[in-house]
Image 1 (cartoon, rainbow, N blue to C red):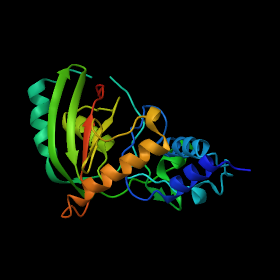
Image 2 (image 1 turned 120 degrees about the vertical axis):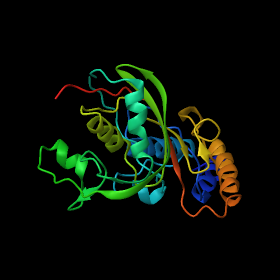
Image 3 (image 1 turned 120 degrees about the horizontal axis):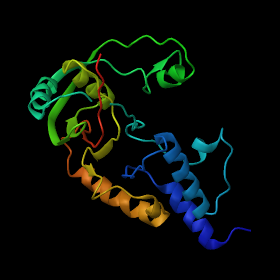
Amino acid sequence: MESAPGRTLASRLLSFNGLFAVQKPKGPTSAAVLNLLREKLLAEAGMPKPSRRKRSQMLKIGHGGILDSTAAGVLDQITKDDLENVLQKFTGNIMQIPPLYSALKKDGQRLSTLVKKGEFVETKPARPVVVYNLTLRNFKPPLFTLDVECGGGFYVRSLVNDIGRELSSCATVRELTRTKQGPFTLEEHALSEDKWTIDEIGQSLERCMLLLQAEPSRKKLKTELSEEHTLSCEDK
């Protein structure tokens, strides 16, 4: 028979409804992080681990945006002035072609999954995106770091690729960190894995929902990305 404290935790967990921030570690996919979070909460509440099919039905958890995996590569001679001048061309309302390695789908399957299988995937057409701010934070050839504040549907991988092309070379992302999603910041709001507990999430839900209510004019969450990566290029 389930103990009274167990029933209390389970009831509280299943009553949660709203948004809160989670710190995604480097390595696992966004989906893997959600699965781990779900397993930890169910275990704490003393609830049985559901089958894969019923996992999302028992405790529904979603995310507000997929974070990409890391990538790496090599740079030829590009100056700081060269790079800063190019960045101006990618600020404001721009057109961007989504990368093949993405969560966009074709015939119900993610493009990234099809690419991994070695299948031919056609490039999606360019679409409008917005970059509110794009600044060079650090430049130590062959590495540099960018801060990107952008709207929804934006791909940092495509931005980096386009920057490389504009410099008559190529570039890839080595490391990417999202520092802000709407009003939620990594430093102030995101829960690290050691705080993925029912109590901590309950408190975080209250704080985050109050934060959203304080900004009623915000119709769509704006994403700010801090891109800390090694970009590299090679001679063509």
